[in-house]
Image 1 (cartoon, one colour):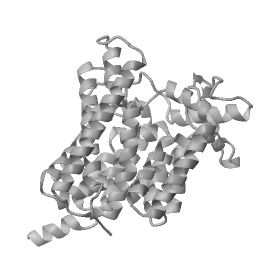
Image 2 (cartoon, one colour):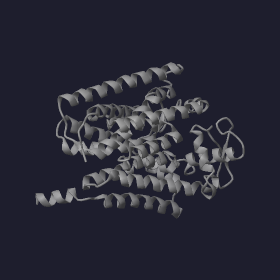
Image 3 (cartoon, helix red, strand yellow):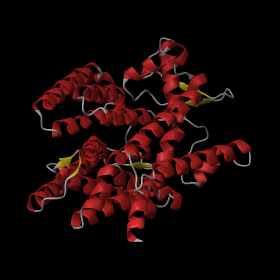
Image 4 (spheres, one colour):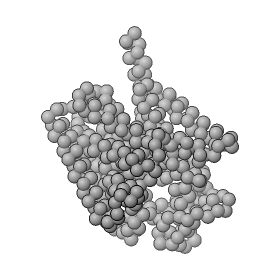
Length: 411
């Protein structure tokens, strides 16, 4: 009986993951298409912070591309999102890398207001493909956990917004697949970084390999990126200015303060508060990393698969860096998913404090991803608790960074 149960649990259940997530998508599409309920109200009922129109982030990028084609610079000239009804909506100044404008110069496949829906569906398919590859072979328990995370409000949010983070996520999973070819992995990370800057820190995964060739590639890749930043320096200030003050559907080291300011508990005190929050976050992350690193030296952990370790270090530097930089929209939560394979393995191969910490990390991540399903973000208490959840996830992530830095890997 025990042998049969063990076989059942260790069988590859990725097909079940596919059935569950596809069923979720089909039900949403079918109900929204029936006319019984709008897609926006349906998604909001499921905890997704959906807007009046789908793919709003992608519509904004399309408006930038169209402005650029008309000879205007969308980083300094206001643009407008045009809906199929003819209604216009004010757009943000461009806060992405200027290379994103190349999406509007791809001939018949160009991104424009008319092709937004097609592009949005394409990005959703890329995201789904990347998730399918990332989860790998699944036990029954793992498949159910992955389905829970993939169908969470924050995972669906990135698809609903049509955000290009789905493309970044695909690039990073492709880098994971091609990790045996470090120069290709470097190029993929650079390609992602030249679209949205922050993925450059994923080069840490290559550095961790410890080989001379990988570290040379990291240095060369970093130099190329610094040259690129120097050329794009005029746009960096605009991007920084677009991030301040977000606290709804957002996380970051300064978001806790933004919540208190929004509710009138604190008065705005200029950039000094943001700098103090960033400093406090850096100290907390460094201390958590040190605890994990020295804990590792005292108690050698069980080896993990090379694939899971590499995936972890593709994701963890992104999330730690984004947290310190300031407010980030909740859909960037998807990059935590790169860390999930290692955390799942830890819960299986270890029975000490490390496994307890991994279970706590997975529990907090799941709870955070469903927070808007159960809670009203407009409540001060709920907003504060949500931010404290993220602080817990970040500090545990830093702990595991130290814990796994010198961990042995098996193929």
